[in-house]
Image 1 (cartoon, one colour):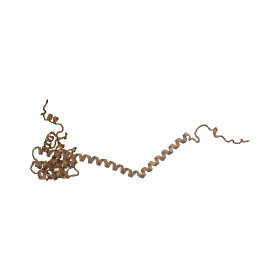
Image 2 (cartoon, helix red, strand yellow):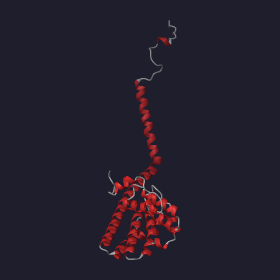
Image 3 (cartoon, one colour):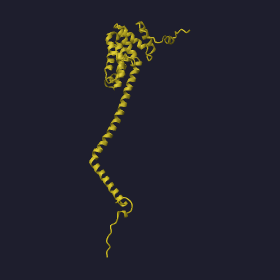
Image 4 (cartoon, one colour):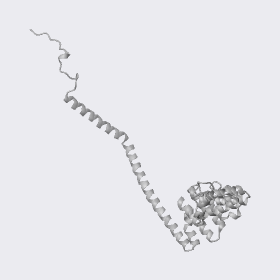
Length: 257
């Protein structure tokens, strides 16, 4: 007589997660997952392989292009430097016409730095040859070149104004340089003195005296400039001496008790 099957209680099963996969199942699942991954990879390269290859090619081409440009630029800059050095040698030998001729091509086709330096060199050579008008034009060209470094543009502006200062109206000098004639500016001394003289010629004694005094009290200025502007301030009735004893000691004229 067959026995009637009895229902097994779940509590009678061994402790552990229900329906936990066996080791064989885990191995099989890993193999299936790996196969799916490989198939995805194959499909990815089949779909995007050409575009990806082109992208890598473009990156490599870009890197090579940058390397070539960098080496070419470096070589070009070295060549420009050699031209400038050669022109300076001509200046030292007082061959100013030769110096100008050497850098003429750089003024037209050189890099920003080479173009700016070459214009300064040509302007200096023009001054040495008594061609002040042409020097003013060259300085003005640098000052108007928005690609040139601002510090060199400011210097060129000062040189432009100072080269034909006597032919300019005082207000023209003031309007051109007043932005540089302020304490803290790198060209405060040079621009400030020119503006102060322009104020003096225009009859603005108070403005001239104040500016001369400010320059004389700026310890970053050269002593010769400070002494000169201090004297000018004194002539205009402005006291530019903060410490009389210190000034006398600096000049070696302090009277000791």
